[in-house]
Amino acid sequence: MFESIKLLASEIAPRRQNFTGRVSSDHHENPTSAEESSLRSGSGDGSTEERKPKHASFVIFCLSCITFVSCYLGGLVTVSVPQISRDLELSQGMELWPVSMYALATGCTLLIFGAVSDALGSRLIFLLGCFFQSIFCMACGLAENGTQLIVFRVFSGLATAMCLPSAVSIISENFSPGKLRNLAFSFIGGGQPIGFGLGMLMGGVCADTIGWRWGFHSAAIANTIAFLLSWWQLPKNKQIGINWVLLFAIDWLGAIVISAGLALLSLALAIITSDVNNARKPSTIAYFTISGVLLVCFVLWQEYQERRGKPTLIRNSLWRNKSFTSVCINVFIIWGAFNGFEQIINFFFQNVQELSVLDAALRFIPTPITGLLSALVTGLVLHRIRADAIINITILISCISPLIMALVNPTWTYWRCAFIAICLNSIAADSLFTVSNILIADMFPPETQGLAGGVFNTFSQIGKSFGLTFVELIANVVSDGKVAPGERFEPDGYMVGYRVSFWFLFAANIICLVIGAVGLRKVGNIGKKRE
Image 1: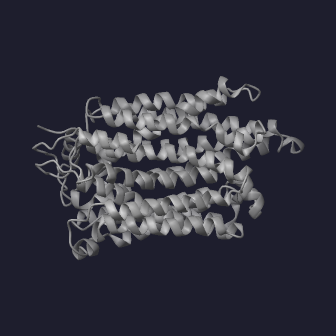
Image 2: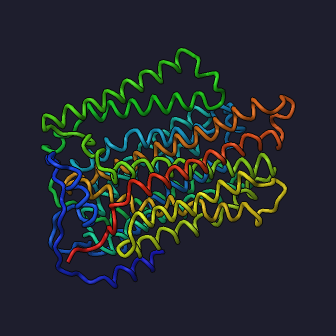
Image 3: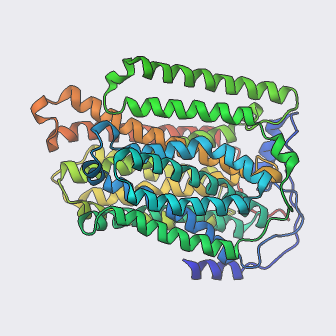
């Protein structure tokens, strides 16, 4: 991958150009037309000269390594859930908490760390996130019980939240809109399927041989190498010292309110995953109620701040832009559907077809290959093909995955059905990563690109948390209600619930297809230079 980055970077010569369509942070009049213009132009910084770092290929490689490691951990934990649950005595309702609590911690703090990276410098926050990720990866491998593992995974999620928006900011600060910038986002997106697929494979190998703990240790070693390489190669921020004006201008109250609201909502959903009857408990009702109140308060606070011309995290006027709203909804749903599918089909392999962890992991080998190809092709053609067409075509392809698994016969061979489903599942998510990052980044001024990255990753990570929760909740509720108690934990009993979960994921993809067809009609071509 590194050689291909270097070759692509060397082919792009600096050119003078003119960019238009910047959306200023204090612009409130006619936001829709201005933002649509920004989306079509593929720019957000008003620069007239192409920018790229001295060692562009190294910078892209470093940033891709971090998304690789974060998704490597996701794949590792996903396939190792049964072994981790047994070794650390996690109850059935908490078996996915090492996955969902990581996504919760990441998703709830991305906006905060995105804003902080704008004030303190994206390079500093990125390196700190890498450093803490190495520490807590090692800590996860040393956890002595389930509580410790979940806590360490939460801190690992916070470290990821420091890296993701600052990585987007580094690209936006150092790469001008154009082919190389598109490829930078594509390689970061491509690092995700590669990381997830290799994480699944390594998790299976470790679980069946030296133990799942070594999967975390290997992640800590790889992340430390990426940290040192990033320290050496990432360009220094142009700003000197702390941007105190921007730091104090952050809407801290709004950030705290939205983070707390999302955290409580995700926690409540995780509690009812194992048993829907937990929704009747006073504590669960309180979590749902308080989270709902906080989310409503956040919307009202953002409206109040925007009306007074004060700083906001996400201006409410942005939601009147169909493209922005459609992209955010699609990111939320597609990321949830992608991760939910990977988790359920893993359970299908292990609980229904009764395969070993290693055999199940080997079946995910196509994921990194098709995901990387999807991300790279998107980056190469994005400036030539309409963005809405790319999104709709890739979603249409990926919706085949849950459809055929909903119709699968568990006795069929892997090559007859599951292979095709795994190959197609990641295509939409990885193409959407590139397109959505550019679309959302162009909606924010250049001085708040960290916040722009936080917005995208917030929707993706919270969507992941919701997706994992809903597919397991649906599977458990359906199997509990339709299967006799004596057959509940037999392969056929599991399959009843899994089949409904696959239908749910298929419906989610169709909803995204409709949203993309209606809401993204005016996007057109993005990520290209304006001559």
